[in-house]
Length: 296
Ligand SMILES: C[S@@+](CC[C@H](N)C(=O)[O-])C[C@H]1O[C@@H](n2cnc3c(N)ncnc32)[C@H](O)[C@@H]1O
Image (tube, rainbow, N blue to C red; front, side, top):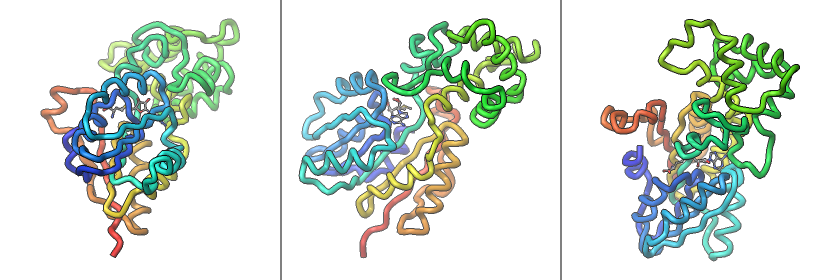
């Protein structure tokens, strides 16, 4: 939903822009071009490899200062304050983008263990320098805790059975690989599920990834504190792909609308049929945006 994001954000020469989820800099490149000359773009990602790749993709855009930091967007208020102070700028942004989730490069890398399509270590951490891997989590939690993760983050109908198979199997052999987890799911779901268009392990993998990375923890509060870093007339765009993310964005924006912000997209925008034809993976995307009122 690149065009929608670009049309909603106030991108003008000299603007200060924050991309809290830089990824491969697809949005950041286009935003950067629109704030030259004199603009500043601060990009965050918690994945070292994304930052490296984004850095090379942002090279060569004239008239814009680029700052990239390896950080969780939950730290965005502190990072923006620190980086702005170094530049004698106000710790405020004219435009902020949060494009949640992960990109195909991360999903397709078997070493990360995010996808059930390739066998690899059952890791799933986006920042592999810290935190607990998926295998450690699934080998440690109680069946009830695993069931709750699968239900809450994956809406998985067979959560109880999958959790039980995981716990039974790990007694003999702890889960180590993505294939171990796929095998647990296949053993737990009825055979008819295996013929469905969507792979039976899809929801389990999504749910475990969300739990491993704490993707939904404190999300509403985080969005609210990030919106408070906007300059007057500044806009925050939030692109979500999971019902839990969109719920947090919706609640945050409703609360912010009571304290000096205007929701500028009342009903979330979804991809057009044209975008879906080119990029079917965008099918669950929802875009919301909020603007800080100007000081009168
Ligand atoms: C959907 S991709 C962003 C794609 C990007 N807008 C582009 O055009 O290339 C999401 C990115 O956000 C990063 N990410 C997800 N959660 C994060 C968090 N809590 N803090 C920092 N980065 C995060 C992921 O590592 C991934 O690179």
